[in-house]
Length: 177
Image 1: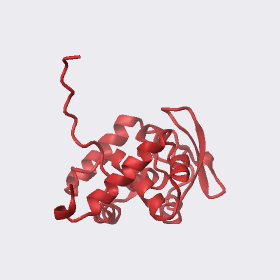
Image 2: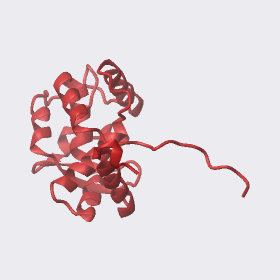
Image 3: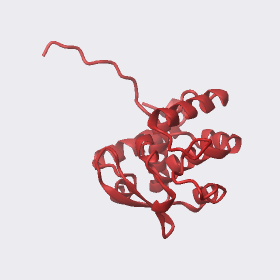
Image 4: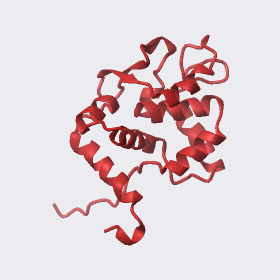
């Protein structure tokens, strides 16, 4: 009691389709792999660090979430699978450094921050791709439960909040309340 709530801002926002298009057109190699894994699976950067080629099975990837320890099978959308086909399979980890070594959370974040600055997309975050993935699932006709199952969200209210933000950000500014 008596303590003011911290002002935290609006949090992570889903990426606009135009930003996704700019990023995809201008990236190659591991940066594009990281981007496509984040958007294609809807998982956190800490989960991306653990994804291995041996985890891919039947058009999807097995992910053990770092935050919840849940093991999930995530379908990989065809549009994202193309990026993965163009990578040497001799490497163990999908997001890896120049010599095939596993990237850690900080390396993934720094790589993506650098690319976003170069492309003028500083307002976007890697975690925002998780929100974009949830939005794309909803647009494809998935229910909130199906979306939560794929992205690993434990709370349906979080999925619903993400989708509300996506709808609100797509509205013309005169209609936002």
